[in-house]
Length: 182
Image (tube, rainbow, N blue to C red):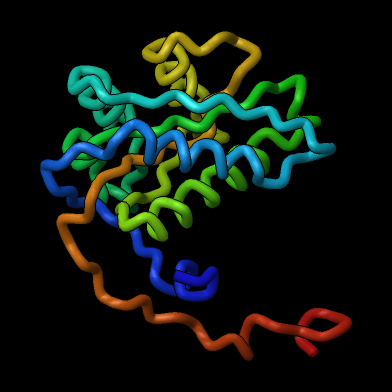
């Protein structure tokens, strides 16, 4: 699969087959994620691989508890069926005030590589700017030190669904030249 096909084909997967993703595949995803761009090449990432059912259940509870009203149709219960969950976290001291961006860039690499390897995944935030309790509860659950922030939760598994193709907005409405709107 080439990069264009990978990018065009990636979808958010919320149903998984009851089939384990081997450790070596997850290690490949994480190895490639550390090649993501980071502010001042700080490479601030820490990756926590969660496989225990109880921990997955508690992560789902945390996400559901802080789910905004407009997203209630997307409850996090499904993450309990994932073979594994990767929690992308960043060291504040090596993020150069770009922790969220650094974490999201690594998460994007994981999402794309997972799809390229035949896995399903979906991006989930491990923080809310206006609700620090979300990341604090995740930090406590996973034993993450204070100087490291959880940024993303990425459930992984072999897809148990094939979502419809995305309906994309026209590119022409998104592109300007030299100044906005031109």
